[in-house]
Amino acid sequence: DTAVSQTPKYLVTQMGNDKSIKCEQNLGHDTMYWYKQDSKKFLKIMFSYNNKELIINETVPNRFSPKSPDKAHLNLHINSLELGDSAVYFCASSQDEETPTDTQYFGPGTRLTVL
Amino acid sequence: DQQVKQNSPSLSVQEGRISILNCDYTNSMFDYFLWYKKYPAEGPTFLISISSIKDKNEDGRFTVFLNKSAKHLSLHIVPSQPGDSAVYFCAASARSQGNLIFGKGTKLSVKP
Image (cartoon, rainbow over all chains, first blue to last red; front, side, top):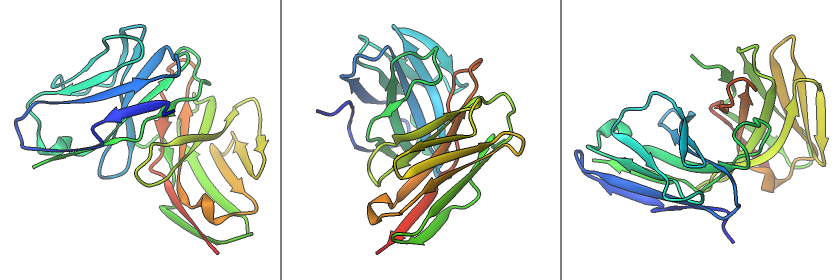
């Protein structure tokens, strides 16, 4: 069974479009995250959600919005896509965000290409 | 500003030998360090971690060393196996902040 899954795996779209990436975890974890890995290979956190509350927002553009319908899902919506949004987006989850020692489990990533 | 630096983008090692991957950090508030391993087209997977109260943690073939005064940690893999070929990310966090800060990764190639 896949612990953290993301769909789609690949997403190619035009500038200006709105798109969503879905993430689901079956680990029963309390906290979920979205990371962006850009062309320079840096993995940077974008958001984390704990019990449906946004607890970290690392100054990403407000075109990006995380939406959590329930504890097992954290979807990423992106409006008005720009060329610079092209990257690999990883979803992750952990048991308890307030305990930094908790291991984060990552999904396989979604490669977004904006043309 | 890179708070976690992995200055070697790649490393090639012969099977059976030791692999040493290095990581430096600048934030003295970091008190927990992790190594993640990533295969192509997959997400990073947790490998090993170390708290700042320790200077060594061992798990099978993997050992992480922490030198707080030098703000340096390293991952030793011995003996290296071809299946260890992957990108290794160093990550750090501060208990007061909670975020994981990742390095750029080092691509390890273990040749048979």
